[in-house]
Image 1 (cartoon, rainbow, N blue to C red):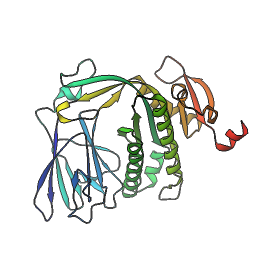
Image 2: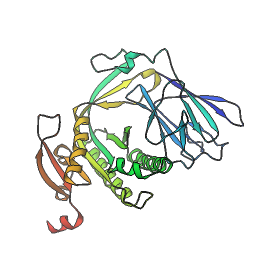
Image 3: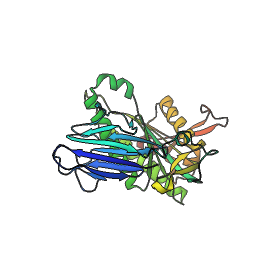
Image 4: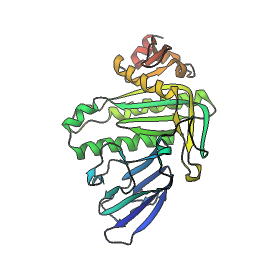
Length: 309
């Protein structure tokens, strides 16, 4: 399933860009769609991603002047349909999906009923879910423009952190991020996930909401086997991950909130990490939708770690 962006600038000739799984839009030449003729466009303005192999979304990256879909400002990730109108500054962008391939079969794709061009592979990965705490409450106190800038800037910075560490952002879901590391070294993958999780907490701690309230997040880490599905090889899709391990890491994020901890990790992740003294053992816990208990750990503060040695 392919897609094309038809770009109509206000004072230049129209042009088209075919996009794959991920496309960036901005003023610099590093972007998939370069709008360097438009000074009101930010350097990194917006991101378009293919979610679950068939659903494209547009995400504003904290731009000053905003991104609009069908005249509505983008705050959370917004799904795109064939013919959706994206406005960035004085540029009108029409999203076009390959109608021949955008069928119900793609919308209902499963491991059991995938088409011939769908490839699946099982692999062990380290997983990270990061969610903004109190987002619903803050969204009621913050204007849509401010909210879009805060959320977009957060997505941009955390996405860059994951990418630079060798990880992959699988998807943005509301105000949450799902990322994974899938090399051949479990210790290295889990260490990378922990380091990025801790870095996200540091970045969040340096931020506040427009009204001055602290910007707080919850992070969960897990290690397990997932099914990587690559939908539409001809369109060069990146893989998206599915499976019980994905469900587990999202359930762990809920546990982080219950425990009042900024970061938790499963025993499956912790066993691959070298410094076990930094973790607080919260014992085995029942996770919603899982029959087996999962051992949960938190990260001790530096003072707690020193006291325990």
